[in-house]
Length: 474
Image 1 (cartoon, rainbow, N blue to C red):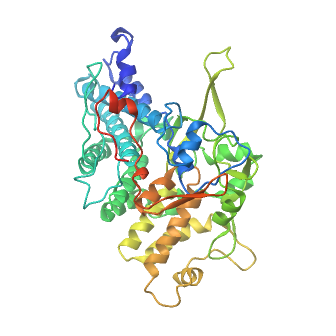
Image 2: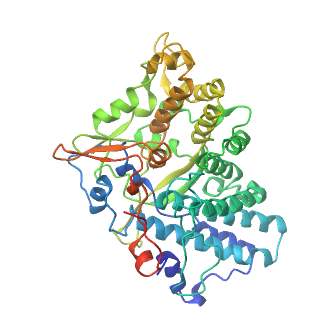
Image 3: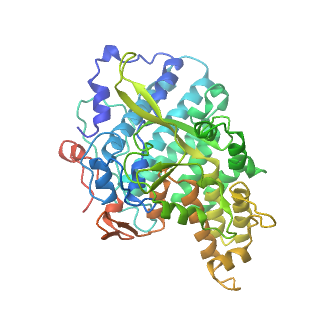
């Protein structure tokens, strides 16, 4: 089978499927158009982790840490992400195939169509960024992409071909822009943060155009979201720490749909967030990441943290949730609520665009919004960001020659801190062509070079053997 997830859907008796004969049923089907798979497994491949002693390590943990092709198909593997995401896309396509011909209010139909388009675009966007090279304008028309699935499957085994990266991005852009044109928040009054609202779609557009290095459009959609007061889209960490009753309460506040910074929440089946499994930042690495800043101030993001194994730390970002297979069963699946899009990402995206357009002072202004709510003042030392402060911190002297480079370096470090454990670091390593070195259990080192082919995850073996898709080079 090319896509096991779509195949599973097709294996159902047609009589058991939802008959999409009204808009309400179509909208309900779209709750399954958000992939239940997490891509946080990319953290184990990044420079955010060290070999963690005293934790349980499954095959996928060791394969990820050593940049070997994954052989497993369960949660927290590329195969699972591929399968679950194409399954989600299949649900989007079922709705898109019928929505225009359903009876009912046109505005309601447009809103449902928008969500179907946006989920289809988002699923393909995440797939192409995991299973293909990062978008490069000079090579995208030749780089191997992924299949872009736009129609419901009517065959048990349907053959697909991999488009090039440029064509995949063009398809994503078409769906994204049409979805943005139709999206209507009024239909998500009671559960908006679990659906593609306009703000979530704007955040998606911001990420899409940043990854495409289309800074003009990235700024356009980032500006539309952030408006006149970007600070409302920056989580107030000091306030959350004051409000919390305990660590678990802090996590709930952090993920609350009521927090303006949380733009899209997705339920994901994963074991990643369990601190007794896999690899985490060592205490030294954790300190190095969070204690390095231009003022020498305490970064509020570093605490509280769970102890992971003998030498690791895990930032407290995830709720430990469990779904039983039945009411009387002790067996089930671990899951968590992932923050798929956050306002802080859009702010950092915009700052990066400003730097690339040689508008460093505007980038500094954006970065100040984040610094104010992340670094704890100490007496007269407050986190006021200036280009002079960055020059001093990075040893760039008084010349403006390196202003863009050092501001980008600061943005990169802030992205590392802000999105710790969330999986975005892997895409930054690809975008900026940064090598990664891991120290193994015996003290030896291995390195993933900046253009290493293994930065492109291998597609599932079933997609190669049965689906007939061309594998990624190794």
